[in-house]
Length: 277
Image 1 (cartoon, rainbow, N blue to C red):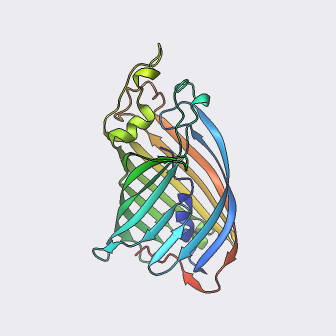
Image 2: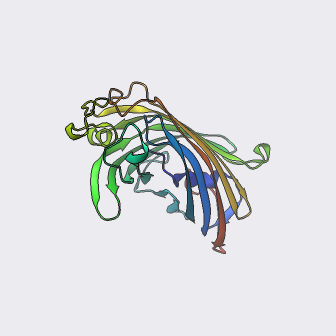
Image 3: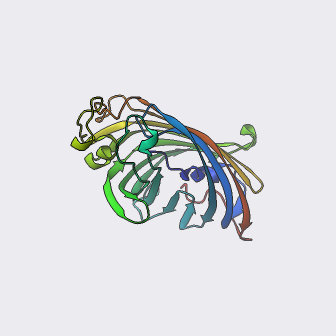
């Protein structure tokens, strides 16, 4: 599963502490490099023009790749939110391990996420959260919708606001183990009888451990311009699918930089972030 392309904007509110408009709209570019899929030794460059939006209020925050709206607040530090994610397609014609197999359409994921706010500094510039999403995964090319399986990644998240001491750069660092259902793993690593070759034996995966993910994201706001460099590393050794002939590389890398220009915004403003606590 590939990183959520547009969820990088979730660190926008940590770029600085000044007041920001209640809503903004814009456009940008997202160049990055990534392996074809987790476990593939091949990688390629991607480039996407992207729309950008941001909504901030006391009850809802929404930006590219995520919606944060408290479904239920159990306590001051424990809330249930909604989360979603996107995944890229895999072109089997360009992948040696999948040669002759069907290509994989893009996916999207949606489900609840439990957030526990563990700690914040006295100056409220640094936060540590425990976040536990559980999402249903669907494949689609916009002409059909197929439920693939389930995916989860409980992770520890360290968030730092941009301050004069960091030249206005905010940052976000996270680490967590990944888990997938049988259907989710088989989508990427199963080899059915019709796809067996001399170099590709039959394989079906199981549910369970799917690797450990490390993510580092920076963000800086320069007036109406937002800059977000990002890096993700998944270490896949020990994953339940590592006997698949479609798995060859335990290191999955995803890195790039996004630049967005916000050209429309509300006159009313809100101090960011609004829903960290």
